[in-house]
Image 1 (cartoon, rainbow, N blue to C red):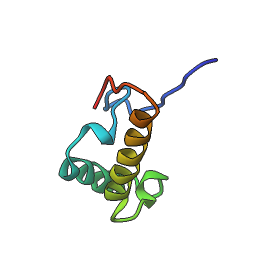
Image 2 (image 1 turned 90 degrees about the vertical axis):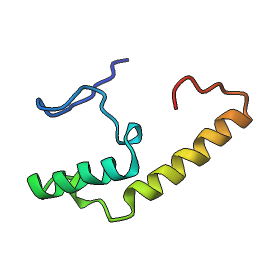
Image 3 (image 1 turned 90 degrees about the horizontal axis):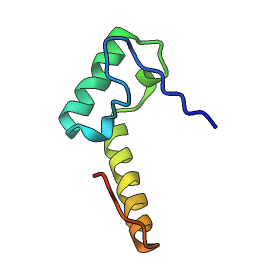
Length: 73
């Protein structure tokens, strides 16, 4: 099995919106919307970061309930 992660040459490999503050993540998405309006990422709605954080929180909680150990935030 291979894992591929494509990223902009100006960015960092494995950069993740979840590692940023809400304001920083929204700023990144707004820049993408401005710089690359036709990209898939530019099509995300205004509450994307909020919804994503909520989903990640639910998944994290369920993982812990099942005995999982979080090694990263």
